[in-house]
Amino acid sequence: QVQLVESGGGSVQAGGSLRLSCAASGSITGFGSLGWFRQAPGKERERVASLYRGGYLTYYADSVKGRFTISRDNAKNMLYLQMNGLKPEDTAMYYCAAARRPTTTPMVPDDANVWGQGTQVTVAS
Image (cartoon, helix red, strand yellow):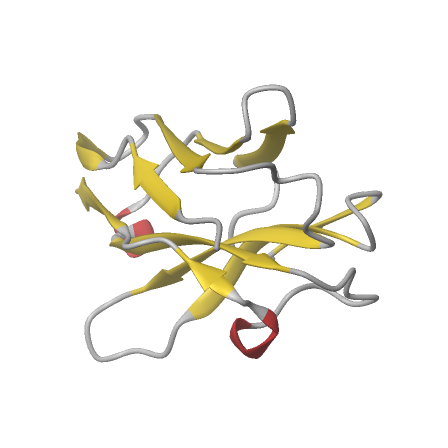
């Protein structure tokens, strides 16, 4: 079972940037979809960005479009989320996730077979 470990979270001022990384313990090329999700206190887990349909398509939540970029490095078995122009409403625990099947629509939490433990992002106003 491949495991995922996130890193790169922290506390920043509004307008700042962070780059989240997700390291897989094995190959990520076997996963059909990869994504980032977040969950703020008292709220449901929501999708942020994903690579789906075998990685050929990219999805971004409307709230992060133009500010966040998802990318992968198959050689290093890594998934990234570059976050620019951070806002206080981006404050949440961020999770990377992987689905074995190549979802034909952007990943939702129920699609994921593997989750990381999460990394906290806090944006101060």
